[in-house]
Image (cartoon, rainbow, N blue to C red; front, side, top):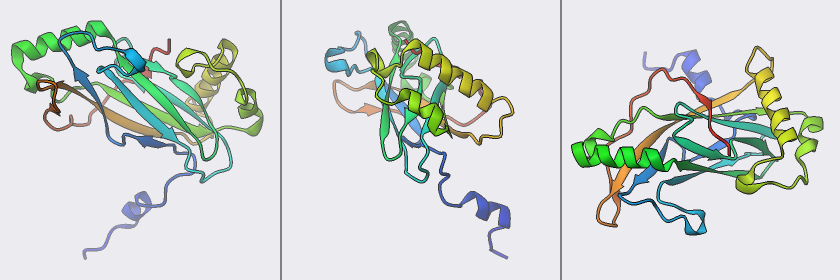
Length: 208
């Protein structure tokens, strides 16, 4: 009687061709500091980088969109785009400095345990797009933060509105938790486990 039921077997099937590989896989970690982090070289302490990789299981381009339950707290660049087969996209997520100060104040009053089990979450969505649609994005210059020009952003937004409102196009959804950790005396950050899952409302992260 210790066999897996058929439904469970289906959930353990091969990766979906329209799913981007998301790294890190489970949670995004932001280091909270007393002073504003240095951003020289674009790599501040309160910044997190996420890599979205096209696995090559389909020859079609994949569109992606990054949402968060706290769109005013995080600056996401780019928050949507197109990934070609076999390539990847780097998404930079910046914790707004005002919220860094609030989190640091909470840490000073209550300790690291008060920052553990953050309810902030991110959602990465991906789906296939037609060659005709993806061709608009090929060889297009990107703006600061990897953002596309306004016309292409509007085209992506329209596509996503259609895909998430009853379209027959399958959409992959990947949720990631957020961890806020305070680094100990310039050393490694220490903290508790990730938060428990729950109902969440995702909105498009600020893109610029």
